[in-house]
Amino acid sequence: MKDTIIKTTYLLLFFTLPFMAFATDGDGCKEEEEVCEEQGVELPKVFLIGEYSEEFERASEDYGKSLMDACGQDMRMAYIKWMTFLYDIEDYAADLNVDIMGLKMWVKVFWNEEGGIDHIGYYLKPRSKNFDADELKAFFMSFISGYTFPVKADEKFSHYGTTSFPIMQGPGIQHKGKDTE
Image (cartoon, rainbow, N blue to C red):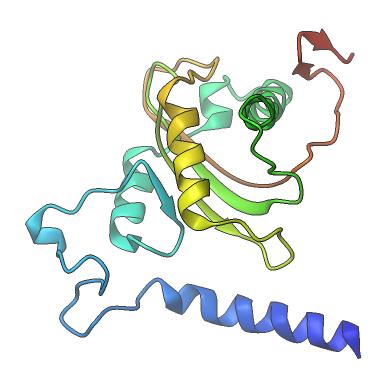
């Protein structure tokens, strides 16, 4: 019975999530925003995936280069950089005494050419720990304000992935100054 409920929940999420991105109040504006694209809506630094869908699509095109492209098509390097980035989030949370353990989410990160984070979009997975949306947004805003990703590129780039905290230790990952190879 429990498996049936879980499967039903996943199916509902799978089929309804794409339509949530199109929720407007009838005039093309998002209800909570009441500002339309032609009035200059920009993608916020931190946002929930499914909100700002048009701006998200534009940013995805503008940051069309992938993390793998930025890493010279070196899959191992891209993996190590991504995992190190996730460890940096985990470590930052620990430094601030913010408990993100149990947080599970889809995330898309948009980096500028210098490795600065311009935007982070996220969506919590169904089995994620409950987390106050304003607190999570404030946490990510604080994190990106002082963080530089250790990859520089000739173009803006992005990466879409999934994560769960705590991060499992992987080979070749720099974490707390120790190489795990």
